[in-house]
Structure formats: structure tokens, C-alpha cells
Image: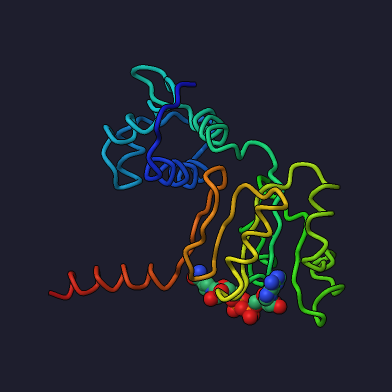
Amino acid sequence: MKEERISPKVIERLTKYLRCLENLPQEDYISSEELAEKMGFTAAQVRKDLSNFGEFGIRGKGYQVRNLYADIEKILGVHKTNNVIIVGMGRLGNALFSEPEFTKESFNIVGIFDNSENKIGKEINGIKIRDIKELEHFINRKEDVNIAIITVPKSVAQELTDYLVKCGIKAILNFAPIKLNVPKNVVVENIDLYAKLQELNYWKEKVLK
Ligand SMILES: NC(=O)c1ccc[n+]([C@@H]2O[C@H](COP(=O)([O-])OP(=O)(O)OC[C@H]3O[C@@H](n4cnc5c(N)ncnc54)[C@H](O)[C@@H]3O)[C@@H](O)[C@H]2O)c1
């Protein structure tokens, strides 16, 4: 697979292709034009996105849905199960952990952590909330835990991030509304629903004009 400098937008579109492909008959073939039409992109965009990672599909026939799905899963590393922890089991942490769609086969929540005496030791869906102080020991004991979801108040998010990084976490899905500083070998993806609402509002203003 050839992979050079890939724009985050390409990766974002790959996840969208997966969403689209999972709802199509798996044995069928789909052309880049058909896929593009379903996604609201151009066929050239679809071909260019995929060509970043090698050659896919059969000339004149298109991509077999099942194969393309499997190839994109491999590119994203979601063909295997990835271990994840959630830190901060408040309203949002609980909601995410309780949502089956959020943690499909590719992501396995292996630990949930908090620092509140009232929460530590309680069970949610058969998993015990652990003391955040146990994290380092937990990660050393369990293989391959390098993704963390942060759902703590923003006032503690940076301090917690420093601790997660020290414990060996390499990828963070951050819900706290703050820009986190991390070393170069750690990746952060921020989720900000308020910012999305602001974007949406801009587009609403446009259509109302
Ligand atoms: N990204 C979004 O769109 C979005 C939406 C909702 C909430 N949020 C953010 O998500 C975060 C959580 O929101 P919430 O409503 O669930 O808050 P919450 O107060 O209900 O939960 C926060 C939890 O974090 C725990 N916590 C605090 N400090 C900790 C530490 N050092 N280590 C471990 N756990 C710790 C608390 O005990 C609590 O259980 C906030 O930063 C909030 O602003 C973001």
C-alpha cells in the first residue's frame, strides 16, 4: 500500500465511504461514479482518495462492495479490535459507554476511569469504574491499550492528558472544550458539538438569505 502525506479530510471521507458501503449489498459492484453520487462527492474525488493507498477495483466493473469495505477497514486499522479506555464517567462518559453503536466490533472499551469516590468501584454494563490512579498499572498489565476517550471537565483535561501520555496513551478522542498540548508522537481528535452547531448555523443563515 502506498501511503504518503495524507490529508485529514481524506481520512474523514474514508470513514464516510465505510458508512455508505455497509448499507449496500455486499456482493454487488459499485463504480466510483455511483459511490460519488451517494456521497455527494465527485467520482474523481473518490478515485483520488483511494489512489492514495494503492489500486482498488476492476477496470470497467468498479469495486466489489465487500472488498472495498475490507480494504478501507484495513487502511483505517479497524479490521481488528482496538482497546480503548474512557476517562470521566459523568453524563457524557456514561452516555458514550452505554451506546452500542459507539463501540462496534473495532473498538473494545477495556477500562473506565474516574476520580470521584462516589463513582469508583461502581459497575456500568458489567465493567467496574476504576480509580484514575490505577491507570498506569492497568496499562502496564494490559497489552495494547493506547486509545483514550476524555470526558472530564475542561479544567482538568490538560493535566489528565499529561498523565495519560505518561502512562503510554498514544491517541486521544477529546470531548473537553479545550485544545490539548501533546507530544508529536501522540494524536488528538477533538469532538466539539457546539462548534458543529455554529457551522450549521452559518449554513442555515445562507439558506435563509
Ligand atoms: N464535545 C462535546 O460536544 C461535548 C458535549 C457535552 C459535554 N462535553 C464536555 O465533556 C466533558 C464531560 O461533560 P459531562 O457533562 O459528562 O461532565 P460531568 O461533570 O457529568 O462528568 C465529568 C466526570 O469527570 C470526572 N473527573 C473529573 N476530574 C477527573 C480526573 N482528574 N480524572 C478522572 N475523572 C475525573 C468527574 O468525577 C465526572 O464523573 C466536559 O468537558 C464537557 O464540557 C463536550
